Length: 406
Ligand code: AMP
Ligand code: MG
Image (cartoon, rainbow, N blue to C red):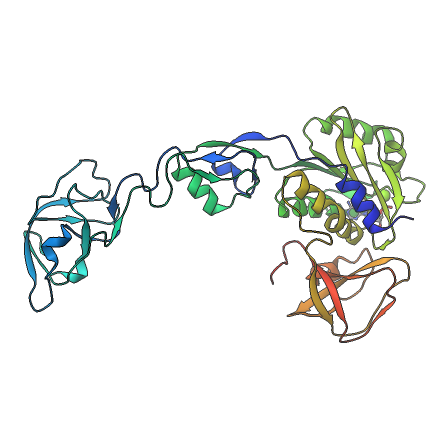
């Protein structure tokens, strides 16, 4: 028996960041930047108005007050998108809209609210100072600036900057492509009615959803029979498109545990008993010429999802180039609202409902119990040496994917 930390550290020591790839800016959402990005142009690219109003020489309206407005002739209208370079003479004004280029000579914008809104002649009722309501070219970003560093996780804000800075394609660590397959003669495709002795293959759907939730791309193969030839052929066929493979089922002590049988003969997959509950039988290793990481998770759905959270999610994040928070990753503190018991010598992952920071059991804790799994918000992590938790005790929880922040 090995510890959870031992198994996780073998995995984290083996997986590698995926080779960078060039993507279009929109497809790069959620990816980690693999190069420093330099702005092609300045932002703003030209000096423009921050308000709907009147472009002026500030000196012309220095004495303006509501009681004694300054009247200026309006000699032009400048809309956003106007591409003509205009000049404003002293003693005149132009109506200008937000985002429209400032005419040469003008050094301030009087908001329309501080005027009578005139179109031929305007009464300016408020003084203005140089630079007021003007967005200077380059005040945000200067051409040639490094605007984003390699290693940055790209979200909508970063994508906007890239687009505005003229970057249409960029090098990122691509999302890991993850082949998900489940094994078992008892499985029928989701949507079909299982006959006596059969069950719906919920694992491949669940694990695919989990893969998506960590920002990777699942390829769901679905159910494969407990047949060594079929499994080997399927794995070989899938290897070409996989950055990682996740299997469920067939790794325990049964007579038809095909995954274990097949993968013990090829690659470097090592099968271990890990001191955890649920999720004791685990396998991990590399397969094929491309050394594709393979995670063989146990078949019971709760065991498979717990294993995904504890071992696969951190590995996929590392492969995507994301900086992983220090171990244990993502734990949040909570308080037990009722007593829990836990087996000695194993790290226990109890399915709990969180109410604020108060944790109670989410129903039955059997590793086949999807009803309780679906009710849960988090996994309460009870260390190996703790066998009982009292109401009021501080505990640590791992939020379930998709339930974070509830
Ligand atoms: P195994 O690890 O193959 O011995 O399976 C353990 C338990 O998990 C058995 O009750 C299986 O029927 C169940 N199981 C295995 N694969 C799946 C799956 N894809 N979806 C739902 N349950 C499964
Ligand atoms: Mg099985």
